[in-house]
Image (cartoon, rainbow, N blue to C red; front, side):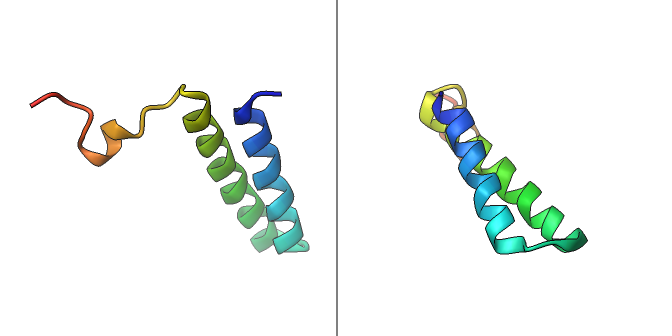
Length: 59
C-alpha cells in the first residue's frame, strides 16, 4: 500500500471516528479523507508543495 492510499485511509478513519454520523459528519470525513490523500501524495513525492508556497520557481 502506497503512502497515498494509507494517508487517505487514515484520514477517512479519523473522519468517521470524529463524525459519528449525519451530513456534517459526512463533510468532516470527506475533508479529512482529502487531507490524508494530499499528505500521502506529498510523502510519495508525487505532489510538489513548493509550487503552492511560492518556492517552485527559480528566481
